[in-house]
Amino acid sequence: MGRALVWDATCVDSLAASHLPSTSQKAAAAAESAQMLKRPKMFLLRQAVSNARQLAPSVRAMSSKGPLVDLTVDNDGVAIMTLQRPPVNSLNLDLLKEISKSLDDVAKNKSRGMILTSSSPTVFSAGLDIMEMYKPDMKRAEEFWTTLQDVWFKLYGSSFATAAAINGHAPAGGCLLSMSCEYRAMVGGKFTIGLNETALGIVAPKWFMDTMCRTISMRQAELALTTAKMFTVDEALKCELIDEIATDKADAINKCKTFLKKFEKIPPLARAITKLKMREEPIKNLQTSRQADVQEFLSFLKNPKVQQSLEMYIQALKQKAAK
Ligand SMILES: CCCCC/C=C\CCC/C=C/CC(=O)SCCNC(=O)CCNC(=O)[C@H](O)C(C)(C)COP(=O)(O)OP(=O)(O)OC[C@H]1O[C@@H](n2cnc3c(N)ncnc32)[C@H](O)[C@@H]1OP(=O)(O)O
Image (cartoon, rainbow, N blue to C red; front, side):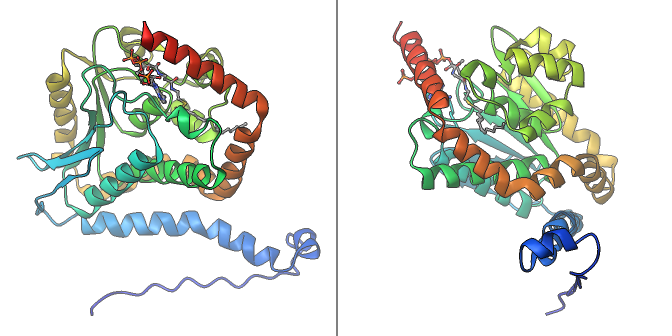
């Protein structure tokens, strides 16, 4: 009751000059293309509605304890999402599903913002679980990649404010998670962060690259991506891959909270729409190429050279761990 309905109908002229080449090849091609183009618009509309709901000031108590993600709200109304998949928080399908669900919970709850961190004292996240890509079951691999895309959409395109308290190494997918947040405080020391995919003989997807190019300069991103650069904490600060260096995890969380406090005096709807408009382009890009991106991932996995590189990388990791 009392719910507004929005109708957004599109009539396609399938005989228009711009549609003729595709319509002559495939029935309903014009309608399909209109549908694809409409998705980003609907996504932003949904986000705006969700933003409007967040204007209500009350914060519901939230505590969701899956085995792999701990989600709590502190006294200031800030949600703390802690990844807890030992030993290194590698992102397998189960962990990604829990992150995805937890992001939904934060969005539903009226939290002041969210801080992403890890329960490990030395690893924020080791990135994608390599075992999900090595000799994979293709059905599961498809679900794995789709869930990773979902997590990125929900985190990068969240209407709530986000910050990462990076309390350890953050290679590849771990770096992506932190870059998808709006602010990064990283614990100083021997930890490293970066997109190191090329070192594994794999290629970071375009949306990983886009996320990096919107965090550090294009020049630094190209150098880092092609050389599989893992930045030390000092280097990361210098090129603005991170925003602050923290003394320990508690300090990193406090620094993230100070960042989130900046929004206390900013009307939430204006903040959220500004963020989404700034991030609109990479989001739209992946929405329109989402299926192709999944297919590219699957065909990548079928490539024997990629499997060989992964095998060698796993062996090297195991040898290192055994020392
Ligand atoms: C043209 C367009 C093409 C599109 C193609 C599409 C897709 C392809 C691209 C896919 C993208 C992938 C992104 C990724 O995230 S790939 C993952 C990259 N991650 C890494 O390289 C990190 C590897 N790990 C480490 O460097 C270290 O483990 C560490 C994180 C620095 C922590 O070091 P330490 O604390 O010393 O821990 P250990 O090294 O001893 O590891 C303990 C244990 O964990 C296993 N392990 C580590 N990382 C992973 C991982 N990512 N996945 C699975 N397992 C991992 C390690 O093997 C040890 O296991 P054992 O104890 O059993 O030996």
